[in-house]
Image 1 (spheres, rainbow, N blue to C red):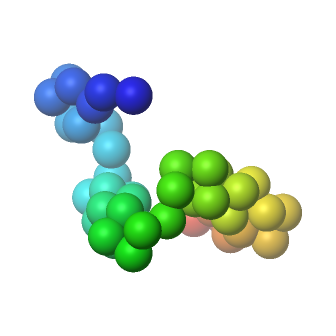
Image 2 (image 1 turned 135 degrees about the vertical axis):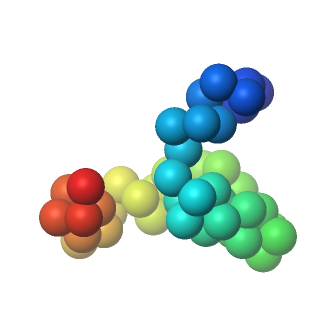
Length: 49
């Protein structure tokens, strides 16, 4: 997926930082998706939106 400048405007800076950190740690996109799809994580995300 390519992130365009327009899409980047709507990405929260904290989320972007977390994704970049995961990339630096060598986590795959699938590993990040699996983590975010955990029910406990989904609940935390929903509470903070």
